[in-house]
Length: 152
Image (tube, rainbow, N blue to C red):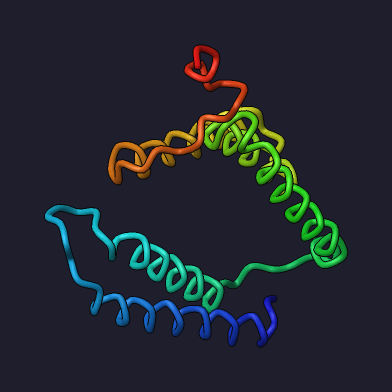
């Protein structure tokens, strides 16, 4: 059973998410459409709220292995984050995101090749749709894939 601390932490996350959502109402909308200056803060606040509520009501059991492996998983996540920072300038944001998705899924015990494949392809696709198509923000291509740099 999850501990009381998890329940209170979930409550705190949900409260922070609700508070942040309320605070984003003061952000002026400067453009017409779905994506504006409020979009990302509101998405983050909704995700915080949903994650906090899920943690509060979760009835899952945490095994001794999960608690024993927690420090190694935390170290693994730090290593994956550092690799992401190092690889992005080399191979670009979307390619790095695919590698990070696969490494993170494997770190948390996902070994089914179908889930790994879908997760590895879904993250860059979602990032492309949100940032490039929806928001018009272009991600770094990386030196290895920047064909235009070869000509200039």
